[in-house]
Amino acid sequence: MDTAHFFLSLLIILLGARLFAEIAVRLKAPAVIGELMAGIVLGPSLLGWLEPGEMLKLLAEIGIILLLFEVGLETDVRRLVRAGKQAVTVALSGFVTPFVLGFGLSYFVFELSLLVSLFIGGTLTATSIGITVRVLADLKRQNEKEGQIVLGAAVLDDVLGVILLALLYEFSMGGGISLINAGKVFLFVSLFFLLAPLLAKLMASVIRHFDGVSELPGLIPTSVVSLVLFFAWLADLIGAPELLGGFAAGLALSRRFFLPFAVSLRTDAAFAQRIEEQMRPIIHLFTPVFFVMVGLSLNFREIDWSSPFIWTFSLSLLLVAVLGKLAGAFLIQESLRLRSIIGMAMVPRGEVGLIFAELGRAGGIFDNEVYAAIVIVIALTTLLPPFAIKLLYQFPFSGKQ
Image (cartoon, rainbow, N blue to C red; front, top):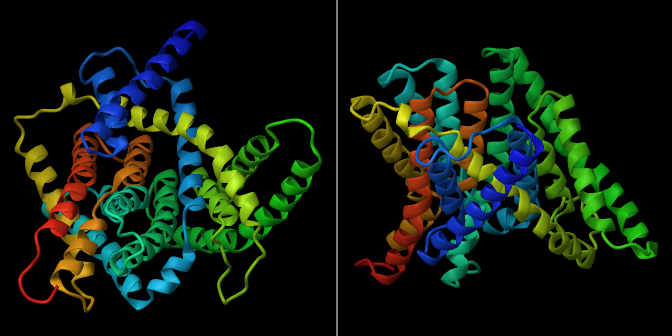
């Protein structure tokens, strides 16, 4: 791709992502659905104006790392502690059940390979904190009991999901499943999560010091992006996906971070707030490129829509994706209304599910039909729950509320 062609492609991606995101939000749908649709419309599935070239893939990689940085930055581990056993129950069941059901369905019913089935099960474990928070905030329920349980469970789901992502990444890069490699990755990831926050806090102190004496603008975003890229490189060095580094950096710089075993690190809340504010424009510039690239990677024209597989597989996965998350909520002792709301709030896969799907596609694990089916399921599980949650609040259940 020559320079002029690249500039034109990037211009179309940014404007297309913004336009479709605005339309999606006005239709009360998550912005990520609009960005995904932009890629489908502009890519080989419809107009054919854009193709996922190497330069665009590189920008998408930066976008996904910054996206995980934002997820880590917005992760509030204290919510999990405050929500207590109920959040842990919802999270663990909502993580294990979709994984087991998704794997079993793919491996035993549709007879897909072991690695493909593991990736599909992993994709179904995801929960999008961003979409869940937005829906609860719109309804002013984020600080109510159900909001605390959902947000606490989503935090744990994210941490477990990132660890699972690291394991699946190792399997895809290593060409197969190995218990020795899995143990190595788990050990490295555990050490990374223990040591990276300490290193990040130390580097954050240096950044804060120089920000106070520097006379040039832009020190914080330059330094924080450098920190995120360093952590991404470090994650790759230990054999984990680069996006794990982004997540760890965001988690460490979060205003709400604390280490396990009640060992707290002093956090400058005002400085952390400035990091969030100054990084947000950069994150919002790069992350739409990733979601558009997901849409560009799809080619619906190559799919045999007359094949029963694509329909039965998509519908079966959608059923598993919804029931797997609802099951966890029905294990806690709450009213039928609250359990239904909590379960439905855990259903959206959003950007986290797309990260799993894209890793599977980029690693050559998913073929076009499987990838399309998974993206369809992620889109539906992202699009429908916000409307379902609003309906659950409007129409009371009989009996205990």
